[in-house]
Image (cartoon, rainbow, N blue to C red; front, side, top):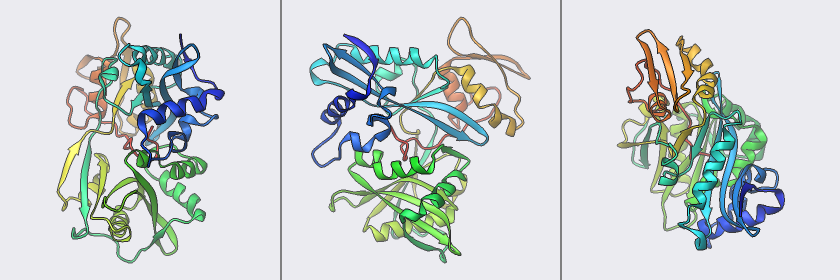
Length: 361
């Protein structure tokens, strides 16, 4: 038995185990929906537990960069975590996760974003983070949108314009035009909830100014759509939301808006909403790397933050005008990323994109 990264020849083995655990007959294969995990070009980032050459635990690991203003935070996302039914309850998954966390200490990554919230992860220190407003928009809801925009379905020739629009977001996953196209085709999160992508764009004076990726249900008896990703002027996004409901014959359309997108939240304020955390949980790989990578974000806000990694325990010592404050990794997650948490004596909050968008793992 051994724990190690997979090699290219083992991609199909990982797909078959993941499909067995996660997929039903009417869902596309995990191999198609998650190319950044399962393709031969990327499978070597992921880990498995092998017994006599048989893969019995798989954990998909995908590197990415999150842009937050001028800061670029290096992250890994963990998903498609599964154990063969015959080997559950033996602690093998915990051993694999332990090896991953050990190896990530040697990487440039500062954060691990995890698609789940099981005790498997929380025992290692992962915590809920962030906040989103959850809106369910129905056709009768009245919202203030731009009426003179031309709205149509995306064409392949729109890819560069959509990528440009996506890059204008201050908080986003870094996506090249090629990666964005792959993610639109893959339908990662949408396929998990039995939906497929439809992409609408809004043009003003023949220039693409906003786009909306909608998950439309596989089956006609389900009339609830899910917004997967978007970018652009909030008033144009409202027009796109209204068009999506009508065009795809939906009773309602759900969108989860991160707390920092205040203009869109305000524009939707006439609609009843609920609040919940960002999707999944987060674990800090290295607090010193995290704060270092966030330095440009702090500097934009004229925050001079001095910190020292705690040598005797996990976490950091923060130095500010009121003295020195110790924060564990778990407290640092809440202090930095939860907008209403007040553990930090210096008050600043770090926004993150919604993690169940196109880059969902």
